[in-house]
Length: 88
Image (cartoon, rainbow, N blue to C red; front, side, top):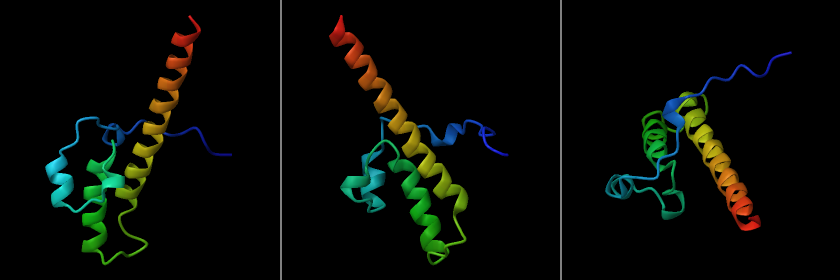
């Protein structure tokens, strides 16, 4: 069976230094201006250009969701490090 064939996509890396002016200009809601907001700008642009076609923007959507997963993994690792530091 498949699985395990995923290659790291550097495009999907979460960014801590977001261009807040660009996010505001793209009318990204505050709740989505996180470490993956820069990818949501591209995804929403594609969605508008294709009239929200469900079969379009697959790469942009996958990259945005992958960024969210990497961001989650970073938070989990930070929490583990925090717990390890408090044990010492």
